[in-house]
Every structure is written in C-alpha cells, then in structure tokens.
Image (cartoon, rainbow, N blue to C red; front, top):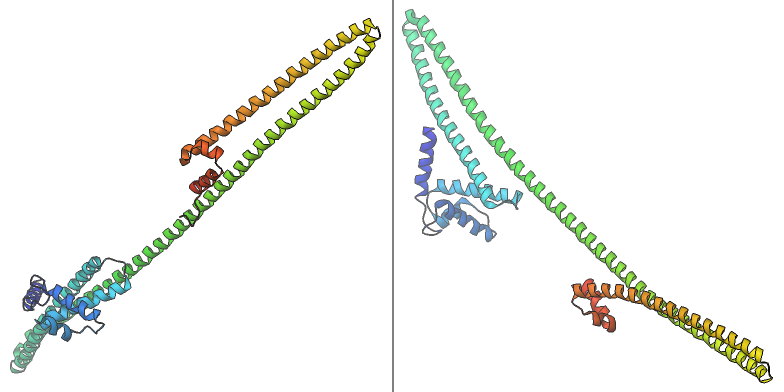
Length: 348
C-alpha cells in the first residue's frame, strides 16, 4: 500500500504541472477531457500528442486521462442511455483499481527482482566460498536450499499478483457486460410501455365509437317513437270523428224517418223513437266519455314519455352546456351535441 500511495502522489505532482488551458479553476482531468471532446467534435483522431499540444503539462498525466476518456467513450457507445456521470464513476473506479493493482504488482515485481538478484549474488558468493571452504560445504548447501525455497516462494507471490491483475481485468469486463444487459432491459421495458399505451389508446377509441353508436341508435329510436305516437293519436282521433259522424248521420236518418211516421199519426211510435233517441243519446254520451277517457289516457302517456324525454334532454344539456330549449327547437343544436360529445379527428 505504501508503494500505491507513492504512485498516486507522483501522479498528483504530474497533474500540477499541466497548464490552465481549460480554465483558471478547472482540474487537470477536466482540461484534458475538454481537449478530447473538442478534438472529437472536430471529427479528428484523439491522440496524446494533440492533447499535450493543447493543454501542455506532464505527458504521463496526459496519457492517464486520455486513456480514461477513451474508455468512457467506449462505454458511452455501448450504453448511450446510461448517465455519463454514472459511467465516469464506474470507469474511474475500475481505472483506479487496475492502476493500483498494476502499480502494486510492478512495485512488488521490482522488489522480487531485486531480492532475486541479491539472492543470486549470495548463491554465487556461497558457491565461491564452497569452492574455497570445502569443510563448510554441508552448511552452505543447507543455506542454498533455504535461499532456493525463498526464491520459489517469491516467484509464487509474483504469479499470484499477476493472477490478481488478470482477475481485475475480467471483473471489469463482467461489469461492462452487465451495463450492456441493463441497457437492453431498459429498452425492452420502454418498448413494452409503448405497446401498452397503444393498446389503451385503441381501446379508448373503440369505447368512444361504441358509445357514439349507442347514442345515435337511441336518438333515432326516440324520434321514431315520438313520431309513431303522434301518428297513433291522429289515427285514433280520426277514427273517433268518423264513428261520431256515422252515428250522427244514422241518428238524423232515423229521426227523419220517425218524424215522418209520427206525422202520419203514430204517437206510440213517436214515444218509442223518443225512447230510442234517449238510448242513442245515452250511447253517444257513453261513447263521448269513453273517447274522452281514451284521449285522457293517451295524453297522460304522452306526458310521461315527454317527461322522460325532457329528463334525458336536461341531462344532456347539463353535461354539454347546450340549453334544453335549443336541443328541442333548434335542429343545429344536435350537431353541436354530437361534436361536443364525439369530436372528430380533424377537430382534435
């Protein structure tokens, strides 16, 4: 960890050497990222030399942040809908992990190399001493074996560090794949949401059309019933008038015949005719009462139907803002009612 800290401090000292081309308060990373974005907008190839020429400073710092910018550019291409700040955070985290692991591995490798060199020198010296001091060969051989074992352990440690570096790289690739999978899932969710919205819009349009058809059928049926009632009333009135006219004519003829007979001196027949006349008058009164009762019933039914129709008209008028008088007396009001309840696509 001490070597990693030293490596980060060295990078920080390199960052302090970059010029302020990106602004007085901008960090080295922001200035270098700004230079990369500017070069990319000009559709030119982003190179460390071009960035170094724009912002100046340490080449190692420029190399570090240009590499980071290129990594972020690849992530943005793979997952364009993921926020850039999130991608930058992931990229920065992995770059720091990989950089720390590499720096630690390189430092450890350097230490191991130095130790190996020292051990090799010690082995050489021991071999020389063995040649010079044959009597101490057993002790020297034991020492050599110990040093050889230590060299093997150091080599194992070095291999372990290299394996850790490979694991970190593989983990980075796994996270990149997870980001791509999340992007694909988000797109699928968006497609499903759009399909559901289209279905709801279609169902709503079908329901509006159904209600329009029902209203039209009910309206036509209502007008037909009213017209039929009017025709029935006229027919019944005409039938009553015809019946009364026939009765009047028959009665007049009967009266004339009876008067003629009375004039011939048949007083008894005159009495009978008077009785018959009274009967006819009673029948006429009865017919008149029946006719009036029938007309009264028809008027009552008509008023009930009219009340129902007026209730429907008042309800429609209250919901549309068109007065009931206009709906009843103005033919154009029905067109306005249809337009307000079921606006056409052109009106929308």
